[in-house]
Image 1: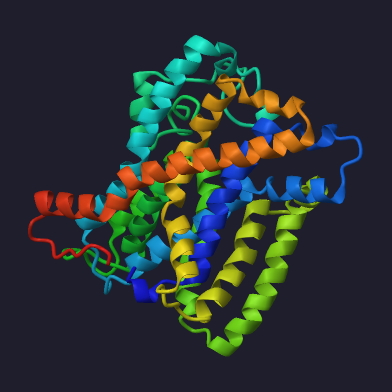
Image 2 (image 1 turned 90 degrees about the vertical axis):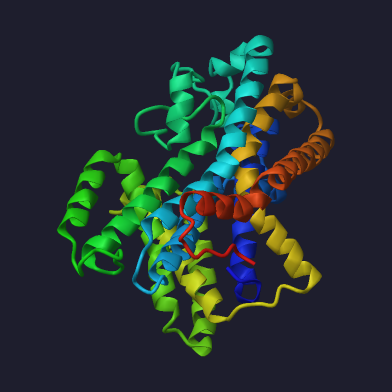
Length: 386
């Protein structure tokens, strides 16, 4: 995406979503369960609510991914170079995933020798994530290879203690599902394909049968992101203002009711779809507002937080588990003031390590992608993002 075409609002949302996942896991590590508080204050209730939106933030990621990845595919002048597409997608995922898996590998070795009770699932009921007591934890070579090829939650569990990696399997298979579907119905074509290519449709149906229901449900929010790309082209700035107002209201209501068991029980559809739909409306309103110049300091800061969000997402959880193995989870038993200080200090420390991981790996995504494309496809006309 060219710098002058970036939308600062979407950058801001992506950065906030990654921070919401991280800060939610950090809160679960250091703070007691909300229901264990006898009389929570308004500030406490607000804090717990804002740090409980990790799953909803992943849904937001799916919508944004559908908009950016699906939209960029549809913008290829209806001719898709499959080799270039796969290299671009895999290089984007692997350049962060592989170092994150390596980091998890070494952290888990330390935990195995110093705090094996964590790997046995002793704290799952407190953290609501990480190793479970059912023995589902796995750090074998087979699991590692399965995670490298995005088979976690399909043929193997997530690798080691890095539970958030479940969503990367979803992302990868959405990257595969959508172009196959688009080729099948003629939205795009390869240099040698016809308008409607039956083998692509058959491949799509076979893949649908292979993937778990949970992944297929997540494809709906991802597809909503594609719809945002298609519909936002037809929305004027005037209508965009109305959509933003309605989108903010509906999205806030969706987030509020996402914590209501009653609401989610009586709805005939998965509630994630409600969150995705409300955010898609807001997203269209933000896009209709136009792009933003990225020369201002606030815009550059927001852009940086957004660009490093994947590294934060992929690396933060094993670092939190390492903190617990070092005894920092005992902060949940100290005073409120000391716990808050620990929350801030540990949050900054882990965020800083994630930024270091971004600096070492993710920021070089375009260079690595360009190198691979030149090595495997010298005839492809490819220019890295500016």
